[in-house]
Length: 208
Ligand SMILES: Cc1cc2nc3c(=O)[nH]c(=O)nc-3n(C[C@H](O)[C@H](O)[C@H](O)COP(=O)(O)O)c2cc1C
Image (cartoon, rainbow, N blue to C red; front, side, top):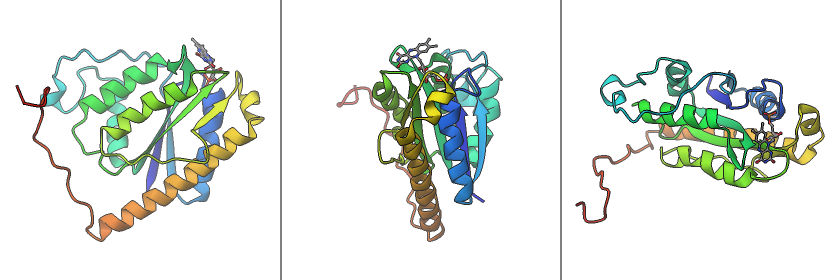
């Protein structure tokens, strides 16, 4: 059974982001997909050192939740990243976590379906959403979308339970993601997936 990995960047395991991800998990399960939720936000996750050791090691020099999550992402068909909005951006812990997870791993993320989910009380949601989507769109990952940008509003989980449109957006997102995962799996079985071209790595258009 295909699996979707969900990351919660919030330090509050029963907060607003958790409420949004919970709605997605119930929908994924109704769609026959397996899920695993990883609580990232309350962990101590340092940022990337740019030491480049992951090139040789294929994992991060800091052996923490990032390295534990890497094989789970490798096995997953989809990734949902949830984050509360902090000062108009995704929260710092999830950004440190994603920088190191995406930079240090060497397995292909090509055609794993990605979705970002943000939770804010009032503002900064679409800017945060854009930041999270960038991890997917540099990795050959199709991005699932919904009936609105993937956001809920609230200060507590109780607020999010009242955000009927936010929760509807989460259900539609999970259904669309399940559809894409099944379609990609079928096309992969048919032999239709072409490998990504690699090799060029230039900093300026003329290669100098
Ligand atoms: C440090 C910090 C900064 C925040 N900054 C914003 C913000 O810029 N915009 C906003 O609408 N809410 C902001 N909030 C509120 C949270 O984003 C919001 O309550 C969110 O839904 C909490 O999700 P959670 O319960 O999953 O942690 C901030 C909260 C904290 C703790």
